[in-house]
Image 1: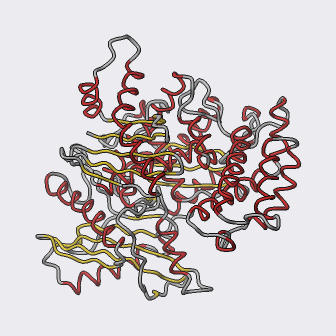
Image 2: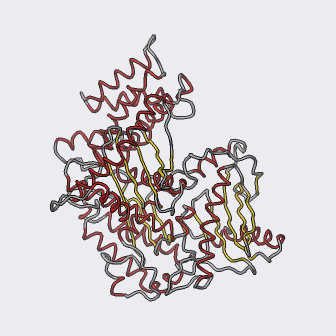
Image 3: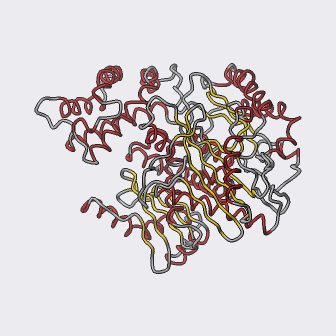
Length: 603
């Protein structure tokens, strides 16, 4: 019994996902359409009717009280978690007891992140986001929703089965020599050939990476590419897995299947990600002429203007006025001159009118200045800048449910080049993906070590199926340990949320440890100090949907000015009979051994 819904303030459904049980329950309650081809609209109407009272209630409370509920549990033990991003309300529901409030809140933030990756800066404007999430064309809407629903299901599967998505960090395949060779191959052969091809139609490959299942073997970014965060890379891995699901049940993959890029994800695959919003062809027609003027300020537009207005609006809404509204960020005062030139280059447009209105309110003597009265004008500017982005740079889905920027011919060439490069390594890599690192500490059952500064993790395999085993073997014991690891991660997050950096406890025959610590770039351990305490309804701790650790590093670095601060986490599971001093010795040895330069793949 699971559901996730995105709705507008007028209770219009912008997106929904339900599992079969929830869908059957809704259809029983409201009745399914009897007309052929009308199942989707009828179910959409039923979902809208079901959630309308909750949506209206939530919006009314925000409007009248400037406050609302974030979760509630019904008499039949259904859990509802709600979160409003700007003017869009996200609602996640669970009725089978498999998810708690934290899980549902995490799912909401992950879906929000997925929309940001799909639609870019348009997500800063609720009005424009509504148009993207709910196209007027019914078939286009069905394709888009199906794609988003599939991504959400893929994320759910990875979250339940893959350690890298459990702790939200990228897992690397540890083989420095092969990794270096693959990076060189990506840079000097694959990317160069694709970018020099006449089929690329003005597009340029900016990033390329090779995965074995969900593990990263090699990653390359061109020098002029926008940087990809850990969050971006995790979402791209979800998309890759959605397109080419890994067949981890097979110990001896069928070579014929593996060579077919349309049906396989078991073998090494290469995926490319375009520049977040590539500049269009300057030689295009009338709208292209408008876009051509935008190209020269594209990176500036994305990096500063829209986000500057979004941050300003947020701070004004929180009651910060005057200098407090612009403190600690690139201020509107600083971008004013460049924005004048940019808008002048666009010519007479609606954004020019909005900018004049904003300047009169913000900068004119006797005007309201940077106060709450500026919020409507700030929203208009943000929406207008997002509209420029949408017109010039947003990818159009067209007739495909999954937008593609690289031509099919170039995709096939890239696929064959990577397969040829890794053919001799295929069997080794498939085994390596299940035996990435081994343990040589007596009494140590499992560990996960995460470098939160780089968003990378190392851990022994826990991929357990009937046909393959992990370092724990297979059978009930291995499955039991796996469930314990998942529980341990969730437990430590609750303590971390309350400000604890160390957690140790005994559970039956096992002893669990969790440590979070900081180091400088020379490896000297820094004093932990007090960690911030978060509220129960705060954004979920992790790196996929909301980068808690980046904010934690920024918070901690304030007391270590001039130093490069790094953050690490270590989780261990020992047999309960191992003495405490041996456990601590193991943890120290693991922490120093796992991140030695000699063991680090080159990235």
